[in-house]
Length: 87
Image 1 (cartoon, rainbow, N blue to C red):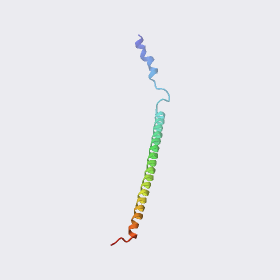
Image 2 (cartoon, rainbow, N blue to C red):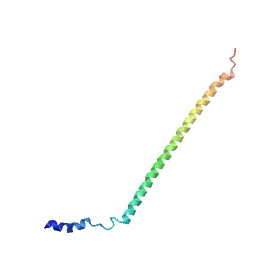
Image 3 (tube, rainbow, N blue to C red):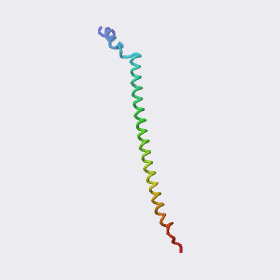
């Protein structure tokens, strides 16, 4: 007979609790998801900006090295242009 009375006692277990669901809870979840998504996007944008800055600095250093090599090359070529070595 106890098995017959079990469904009535189980009714309280499956009953919805106040504040656990509904539009307010869904709105809270949506706001939490949106906030997290905005945080993730901000982190990604920050990493991309840092990468761009690092890339720009690297390219600037490379440009300076190339310019220094070109300056050294022209200064070395200058001596041959100043001397007349024709026979």
